Length: 229
Image (tube, rainbow, N blue to C red):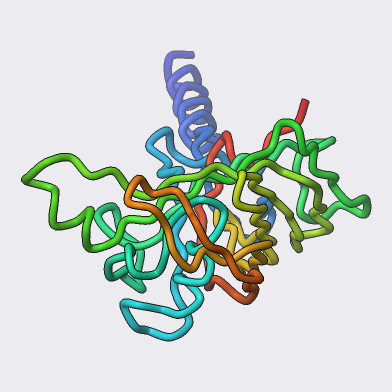
């Protein structure tokens, strides 16, 4: 009897040890590739980055994007790294509210809820970088409000707008959801171009706005990136 009991114990122990541990197993066969099913680690970095298309530190599209909407003039902008990092370049934080939980293989498009969606961008040029050990000089920062957009399957088209006394500025994100990353390009359009400004920073002369491709972007998808009510 004791021998049979011992064999039964070994069988139960083997069965339990081979069961599902509940740990994340990636997006291999049999596992969902949807971001809503893949929970990233709690240390998920929320800030994405924009890489310029020219490869230089004074990318024309970077300057055209910045020189409107009471931001600054090209002469006031230092060098901007073409490769974003925590200490230089263009970084952003994305918040998109959807009408339903994100599923990248859904037959029904997910609609953006503009009132609860935003795009916060920070530009850290060489002026900010050189002041790290000196007087504080904050990055150029502005938050765009969502205006509309959809995510259909894994393809996204999202629009945002920023309004100021010196004209509006709009951006459009066209990209794809790939696992826990959102990747694509950012297009922009400015109502006005600030050609000169007062020493206080206020724009005093404007010309017709500019438009183009700001650059390519990559953003991690964290728990707060795509949400639904």
